[in-house]
Length: 381
Image 1 (cartoon, rainbow, N blue to C red):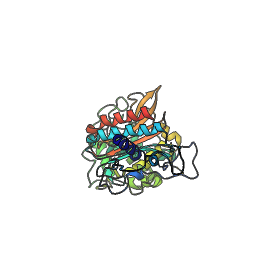
Image 2 (image 1 turned 60 degrees about the vertical axis):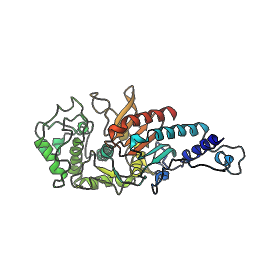
Image 3 (image 1 turned 180 degrees about the horizontal axis):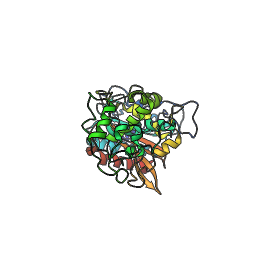
Image 4 (image 1 turned 180 degrees about the vertical axis):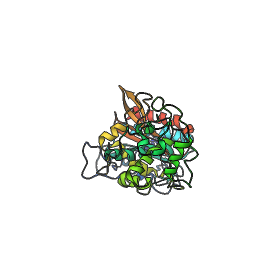
């Protein structure tokens, strides 16, 4: 009987996060959008939010039935209850892989399917997200492309004169799909005594190509700085202002900054510092195919293009700022943003849900667990 009580309370604790607080994806802009955020993971992080407490003499009926509705189960189906229990058990048993500090959110349409927190952080704690920044940067670039000021197949040398050398044929598309041949990282990235313009000119003149552009693929971040410099040239504004005007202010990231220690030389491939909820709002926009909180941020066609193979079949893993997974007939049914910190965001298009794992435990320590959890969610939802 004691085991029954404990199981019932675990179910109540784990499954109490079905709040409807995320926008429903629609083909057209909704008139009354709803803000996004993990309300369960907000607040003082002093205890394990998902740790059950003994229920003592609590009435079992009150756990499963609504007040005054004898015999009627709550809105969440029994299958969803058991799915959430599986998620809970997995995350608790693998918490050490995240140094016992993680937050998880899974959403579908206008409903929070599951959320979990363990450790010192909450959903408003600002943390470096490293390469999960790439999808945000790519979204800013896509917004500029929609305005007609840039084209994906424009050459960098058209806008940045220092690239009129062996790098003159590199295109914007190649920069954001890891096929440019630009160095993976450079000594100019994090210098506070440089502007982004000076950084990019240094890359053009003082680094060698790793391979012929368009012929190979190699993951890196420096190319995103070059893409962002192209944006500064056509917009005639610093990157921080461009980001806020085109994406940040529209998706609830108005306080987000790239590279706070050297904002004039932002690491646009990995420099964002933000909270889980701030990134969740951006992810919701991608999931909603360009809309957030009733606002059309990007065209649906732009989101589709970001999720396509942009490497000319050199490496179908890469879209624009996104990784492509579960590829069927050339179409990725899942796309993801990965991070050196272990932060892991993904969207499943075939089953219509999205997820976010927020941690600082590191890529190598978490990647297999992240992928295993993604697989579990894919099976259950």
